[in-house]
Length: 276
Image (cartoon, rainbow, N blue to C red; front, side, top):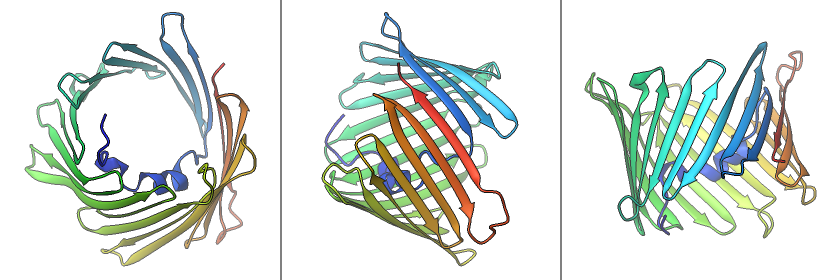
């Protein structure tokens, strides 16, 4: 909504996505289509071990309102309403689930050229209030977030971070887990189209003196196929292949193996997203 620093959740997002997004050990099929009335329909089926679940979602935009309704196999109806520009540079997001009437949540986001503020509250008898603030520019941003439980009178979380984003690189440092961990990450694009990249991330847990170092990358074999890989100092090696079968329809195959326990079976995942 503006050319400001973005949300606090955007800090460290690019390196994090390259190392974690689409890696899975499940089997997933997603089919998306559009109705003549402009409703986007999405059906998803997921097999997790021996359990199969699924849902059907409908997304419709009416003027400045985005309506997202989802029904899953547990008969839970999830609804999200997104209102843009009710006030200048402001977005409001209301979500709730049925039949759980205490699941409601309201979030307000305010965007400015040099700051982004958010506030969210769970609409139940003992709400948890989350707030975040980010200051800076699209190049450098500093921010923090906190969660407060009104029933216990204590903080559920507080996190701070800083990020630097350039056309060919992105770096961030995040102090999280109520000050118990620090994470530094760096991503560098290897081509102008940003199809290939290298990434490194190190996390230190102060309470246990444990360090986790992860390196990874992505490489475009051609304009339809991309491979990704990651490896951490604990010996977990993951690999992923994505291929665009037809325009906007993607096949993803992922796997993870513990190189320090090769007697264990590797984990495999398969996802197909079709947009006829």
